[in-house]
Amino acid sequence: MREPERGGWYLAVAGFLAVLALACVGLMVYGEWFDRRLVASGAVGVLLVLYAVIVVLFRKAHLTAED
Amino acid sequence: MYRRLLLSLQSATLRLDTWINRVLPQDFNPLYYTGGLSNLFLTILVVSGILIFLYYEPSLEGAYASVEFLTRDVPYGVVFRGIHRYAADAYLVAILLHLFRNWFTDRYREARDSQWLSGMFLLVVSGFAGFTGYLLVWDERSQLLTSLTVQALRSVPLVGDRLARVFLGGPGVSDTTLPRFLFLHVGPAMTLYVLLWWHYVRLRHPKIWPPSVWVLFSLGLLFILASALPATSGRPAQPGASPEGFAVDWFFLWPYVLARWLAPGWALALVVALVAYGMVVPYTLRETPEQRGVRALGQAVVVEENCTGCELCYYDCPYNAIYMVPSPYPGKSRAAANRKLLAVVVDSRCVECGICIGACPFEALELPRMLDKDVQQRIQRGARAAAPVGS
Image 1 (tube, rainbow over the protein chains, first blue to last red):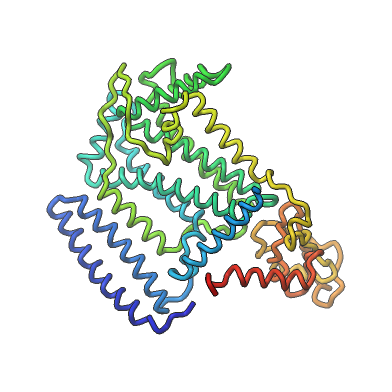
Image 2: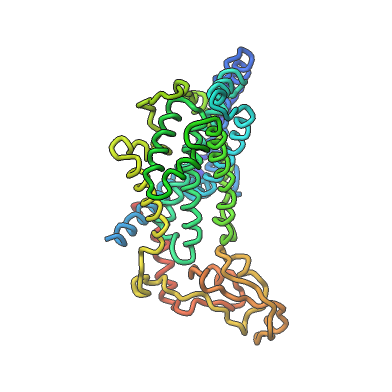
């Protein structure tokens, strides 16, 4: 089901999630630095989930093709 | 009644697929990868289990302390323990989704009964490995579960005492008990890979791994759960004490929840009865060819004059139902005149799907009872099932 007209919207959301992912990287460094390891591992989890959502959004924006 | 229920469940499953495919790209639909997701979670369980195993001490005195050491003092030990814990739950959920999906979409009978049976064994062995994982912590819950299990096993006629002895590694809880529990956890987990071989052996193109999106998402979710809700132990087991309550985990410990109302022996009998029913499910629905409708196409037949031995059907058959043998005589068509191989259909494996007919460019395969009108009917049904809901 092609939805080319919403491609820009998907990319905007993906960009926002990428910024959140960067914040998670910051949290990972913070957690490791200050010995708050549950914060660091939680940030790893959120980062992975964000990456997954970004991959889906890229596909819906037709930036990537089927495997 | 049963047949009508299955048909409505099949329809509901297909509608659910359609709804998910509206939101996600079709090849990301997680319901298409329930088997692959099970395999992913099993891999996570094995890797995290090996890391935990490095710190585990299987003894009455040391087991609880070693788990607490892992949880409190080993960097990220609590995360690995949590991932192991939640991956076990996710694994069982994925297995059950896989089971019900294949049941409801009618992919469990006849040529597919081998996958169903191996799947049932996988479910039972996985459940057992999950249950023995709870015993290894050796806290109050482990002690209570051990006590209930021993009661249930002793209630088995004739061999009850012997079963309890095998379970405990001796006549009662002793220094040999925790090593036995460790064996009963790791041994079945290793057996799972043998069963997986059985599960896959008759499938040519099994989806054994989910798309990368679901690998990332699942791993991420496990990290989040392990961090937000860290796995913890109860109070340490006390020799001679008889604890009464424990936190319920429905996934693996539901027979013990039932044991609140039933005698442990009856709870065990219920588990055995459910497993036995699961094993015979593929053989409960007997249909005449008329009831099967357009599915009664007859097993694929090789039109020997036309077969060129190109092996396309052999590679495309998902059920290993086609073998290539040395051709005893040349084919009649010009393309088949110099063939070296000939396709042979193994009737017991053919599910009459027609994939080989699509694969063959030489019209060398046919479904004997498939008429043109049946093909049209099948295409129309497929198109209706794939159409968005409401269209």
